[in-house]
Length: 103
Image (cartoon, rainbow, N blue to C red; front, side):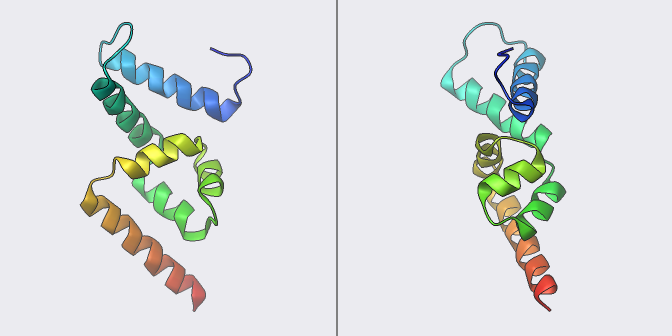
């Protein structure tokens, strides 16, 4: 592993590579397979309830990523690969939480 990586980058890279191992991959993969690995990596590193919690107070993507102990890229993958129904559920929970805190 690259020695210059920050701890959070190491965590994300290691999880990504472990997903490749779990899938039995060796060598380079197709773009489609790499997308699948990125999706699973993001899901393993970011639970939905943790995502909701972070988005209720974070003022930026970077701040949310820091709270979740992932890179902004992994957080973007988590958001990008969400099923539309999951995205609506997260958005609703975040909005309800912000309204509750505003009272």
